[in-house]
Length: 300
View 1 (tube, rainbow, N blue to C red):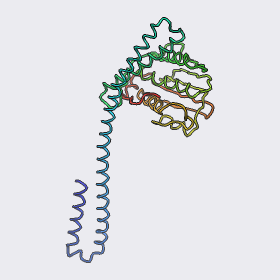
View 2: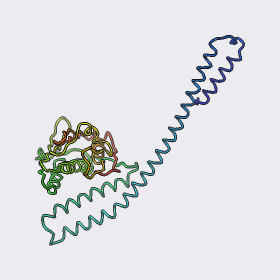
View 3: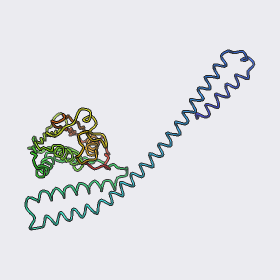
View 4: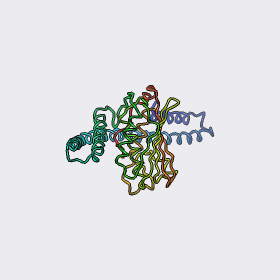
């Protein structure tokens, strides 16, 4: 029964009561009528709320469709310039006069381009807006962290990047490319928010069915209020003014880690640095518990 029919039935019931001669002097009749009037007002308000809810759902679906179309359009447009960058990087690698010291930087450019192209391919082929299925396949987390810390250490002037606990292979199930975005973002943030240099320490450990990666810096840190919101979309700490970023990188990192059945947290002290801890399960079943992660926002 709809709310409108309920209101009509209530009015008819009251009308029958009022027309019954037996109720002519019933003192409760007026109270029933007052209650019915209030009930009718509530039903009308509920109908208005239901209409507003329906309209919002329709607008949300339309916005989602527009966002999907925008993401697909941007993804298509990015492929050509990325291919040009990759081609130019390959030519640089073949350039005999290129200084040997520049080769790691060229390699980093090519790796970044390949990660972007991989994500774009996922975005273009996925059925759901702004999501990419996490495909858990065993890979060596220790080897990946060794490569990433090497890349960051080679390009971070004034910073010392230390990796501990990666002296032997550590296979885990997961999407290697998506998790590489998580740790690349955390490492690059550690450099970016440590303008005075210092040590960036990466600790890898395993135990109790999970692996733990802790990335700590000696940078500017954040206060407790900002630390609680660092993973919110578009949020930037109050002391991040003047530093490039859109507030999307950590949000994306959390989405990726959540998709893998893990967790990410931060401890920070203003002026004394931050430490991000990522925990990932070693069980493939836990990774499969969730299957999608937003990729419409690239790490900043």
